[in-house]
Image 1 (tube, rainbow, N blue to C red):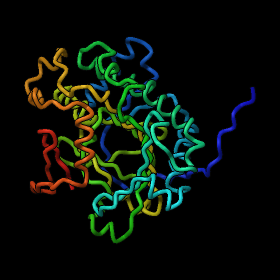
Image 2: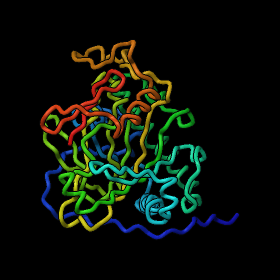
Image 3: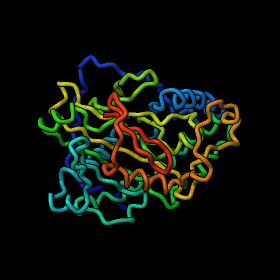
Length: 344
């Protein structure tokens, strides 16, 4: 049987790394090649536990994709923005038109047949589907096992809440940031204001344009450094709920890059992970770690949202809520009884 020739698309050339002196966050690196042994998993679980309970972010290396394979996915990620006509973009590509958060993004559910796609992207759907499955089974699931061990739970506890074929909205996302000088002035160079993700785990493929920043426990914004062919992993609301606040959904934002990168495109490649829709986002109280937790973070039992309810609430509120100013650039809204903060 002859090898299947993948469809052609122009190669996306990333920006060179910045030479600017910026204040980078000190994030640990998890080497997934070490998960194959019990000793390796135990050591990595301690690393992941410390990272998620302190910074809410860490890097992953040796995730099963070569640099060439990752580069191919960035080529595909550029298709909805570079090869789709303006007419088709109006139908398929989500464009946030508000000045505060101006970006283009295109989501592909892990079930790539769930919706129609623009014609230029259709030949690449088999590769996107394989990419989603790899992220889910070979990256997300090993990370969830480590985090379960960190909570002193059975290894499969969190994996069992994240089925690949379950009903839900886990998806691949391609993201592009088109900005004008006028918009930069109006937004004080903030491309995407400070927020938490509402899923459980976000997988971001590291790219060289420096723009992502995280808010530390001390209240300082620090940059996330590019690590070649690495993943940037962060916790979202759902994981914070399930862990009673032990694992942190860290506030992060996207800002204007340093001067030597401002003429380059910032193209994002993500896998946004959520639990199955019917999972109640209540603390996993069978965890001995949570039983010892003095400041257990939880919602009243009667108000505990399911993943579906929380997802729909956060999605519906985005850009529509009347945010209450709290001072120092912080705004608040209440979704399903939970206070959600935004940082301008």
